[in-house]
Length: 298
Image 1: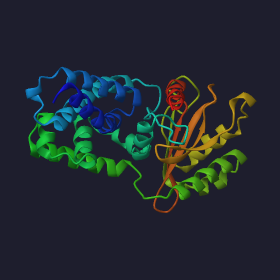
Image 2: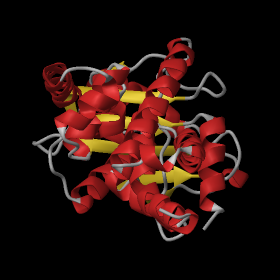
Image 3: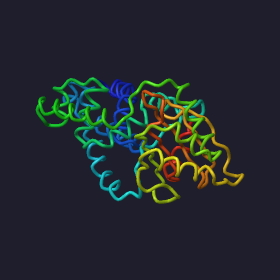
């Protein structure tokens, strides 16, 4: 390929590579950096090494993401409280078109469940189950046998199924439950809040140690109801702005991005009974600042 063809081919591959890197890392800026490094290596690679260019790019980006994730794991182990993946707002003002498409296909609940996986498990699972990569290519990427890669995928699939709410819920169902929960919490009606929660509900709040947030996962209806009714009872200053109902990673969410310590993104998932089984609350101002920056790029 000549230089123009090489560039054009990479740009056609960029959305797929960004999707892979974001799913691997749960951080959009880190994912974009990985893809950019992939471009630098691609542009410097001798033509004879690019016999299967798509597979070559997948291998490079996957290996870079694995290395980045190993480094990130060390930071996340000492992170103050639960580390939650960074969201992408995909309303009409959400940001560049390629990010809106990415947000639509990457559920936060699934991204969170992927955090339970080791680096190579995560890569093998994504390559096989999401990107339909042949096991021969996965084996070359991870420098393992095909059988070993199949075992990685099998273990990863089971862990994801065990930890991620996967019931197919319509946006209307989610929006209704989200607004009902917010209204019940704001009114201080603890019994109403409890009636909306699954017996095994899990609440996760990421403040990064920078703002007030639960440092450990909230397990069970009583604890979730206690914390969220307390949070909702606090009056916010007028400059904080109102919570907006927007779409975040393809699902309804309540969002406030005023640029102060009251900022938050809150969303839920439902089980097969329509009960809230998973709550995601992002309050880390550093992560939220990156979300605001993405919205300004539209």
